[in-house]
Image (tube, rainbow, N blue to C red; front, side, top):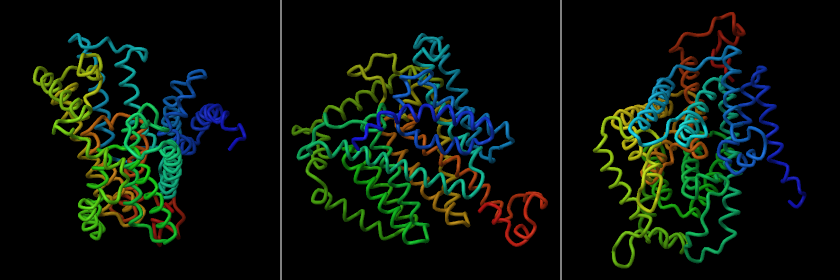
Amino acid sequence: MGTGIGHYIPLVAYLGCWVMCLLALGGRPRLTFFFLVPLLPYRTLRDHFLDYPLGGNVTTILVASIIIGALIHGKHLPKSKLYTIWLVFGVYLYFSMWFGFVMGNAPAPLWVNVLNFATWKDYMLIPLVFVAAGLTMETRKDIRTLIIITAIALLAIDKSSLQSSLSHSFAHFDESKRDGGPLGWAGSNGLAAFLAQFSMFFWGFAQFLKKGRYRILCYVLTAITAFATMYTFSRAAYISLVLATFLLGILKDRKLIPVVIIFLFTWQALVPTAVTERVTMTQNSNGQLEASAQERVDLWENAKTTFFHNPIFGTGYATFQFGEHVDRLKDTHNWYVKVLTETGIIGGIIALFLIQQMLALTYGLFRRGNDPLYRGLGLALFLTVFSNLILTFFGDRWTYLEINGLLWALMGAATRAVYLADESSGTTPQLPSDSLPHQAADVNPFLAYR
């Protein structure tokens, strides 16, 4: 805007984090959690915190203060197997790092200055966000507010992403013009994954909005996000969008099924030339895989050989980055392969249980919820998780806070929504009658959560 104020935004946000830590510990963890939510995907803003004391850990401290503050003031997690599975998974990954050290595959994970321990610490911030959401999202209003803040954060990411993308000329595809935008370290494919997931989230959520103007706003946000996704030039994101849209057609809006089928036959006439070039460059003129696709295949073959040498426990969590691989790459470019290679069959089973519970929770909320808000949240998250499961076939789109922080914040809200929905329908014990206004409780206990 030319005012020069933008230069001070990172400092204000950094100072705001510390103020919010004090508020969380003083009894306002919910307000602090709402402050945290827009920061989760905005890595480029959080990177500016590195210029200040404890800047590299301020996000972790903020999340910890929310959890501690909530527990001090008597907050409780809703009942969900997801919390237990995450606890088991986190502990297993920690001991897996020590197994990797004993096997000589990585250094001892003693502190954050050691790469594998830092990798584990950053990953564990995701379930901590999940726990913070479960503790602080207590009412229907809280869940609705979280969804609104998520929409605002997504719109900010869309704006930044499109400004970066459309500043280039894309008459033809050029890999050098891609970047991670506001997600920074997650890269261009990480940005694409985030946008693809949340375009489907708000498309699914819009199905249950009753007021026309809110539904239109939701569809506009979906369209803007899908448009931004197109200009990330990620083939995995394109695939996930098409398949998730088809799934939405099966679950809720059957009109989308023929639309997807027609699009598959006509897409080259509808999308920009650069997008067509990106999609069709999977093979070169000789019918061979182009460089990035061939790299993935070579990495997977290498990872397969490694897995068969250590099938039960793997090589140890976060050890793949220490090995020598194709073109010196440090990631398997497939989260499922990474889990099996580093943590073995045991880690794979735990991850499978985690995914199963995510799908069961969100689908159950969608199908059995009585409140349109909760049903919309369930469908939206089911589509988002489905999109993520597709995207992780083509790279690690699971362990980045920037990509999945908002997803797990909303999953935490979903665990509370299940509890609220059950309580309003009388399937779980009600609160003591003297804790509610008698008239409201007698007429409709659900009013207590509005």
